[in-house]
Length: 184
Figure 1 (cartoon, rainbow, N blue to C red):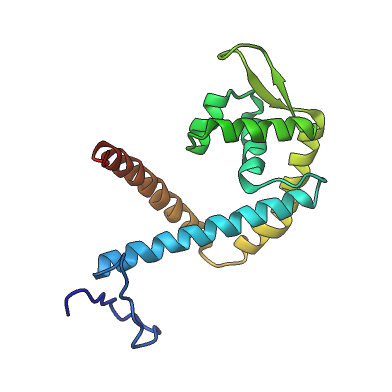
Figure 2: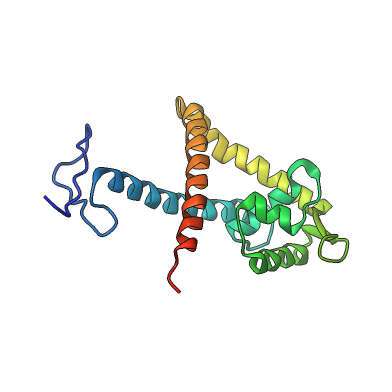
């Protein structure tokens, strides 16, 4: 049937589901689209988790990406530049990163050191260290304990990490190709 996506039947899957829509015309497209939607839902759930976990240890209303910046700045207890933060988060929206950094500075969680374009770094304050330590404790008590209770989940996480890293590279490459062939 042309234009109709036919998803292979898997054990326990309901029969008769309509998989047809504009992004998926075949089994590979259905699987890719399903993964993309799972990624979006996971990203949003992860952001809510990060915000709620941070809110449980401090009074800052931060987004998931702002929370991620705080932890990345603390990572390895070394100062980070905006270039480091953009590269480590795979982001290119530097003005938004700068806004988030100002918010974290205003909350007393990080410090800006140095001057000029290449001499500015960010590091956590003592309050930032306390907040990230407390966040880590809540994370261990809630998230890590929940993950540890799922048999074989550690292996599944490792495979998912490899798959997502591979997919990240694929998306980066095809976004460059798409940009090369963009209409004027």
